[in-house]
Image (cartoon, rainbow, N blue to C red; front, side, top):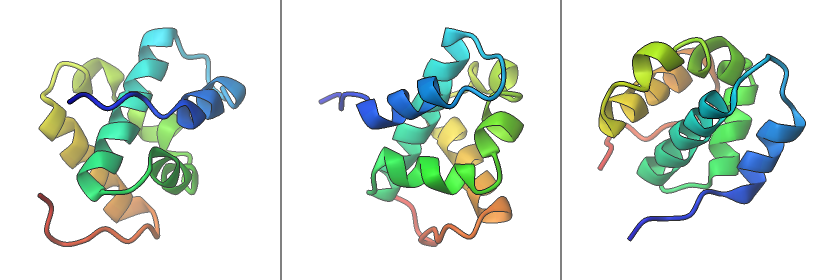
Length: 97
């Protein structure tokens, strides 16, 4: 069953648009955050906060849009998790489902 997007994450994006992003990039960023959260078993808001520690949305997700949006969901989530591991203090479990 498809889980609806976390409206609080989408609202945060729309209110805090730092870079000039088009709607496709914003939807993609929400997709990355929500699917990463699902893999971790946490909320989208939690992953959003972790990415905000290093401005990861504007420095990783949005700039990587052209490449990442053509990849599989698992690959995108793996890349987002790798970014979190390398650039934030967010604690990520070693084993992923």
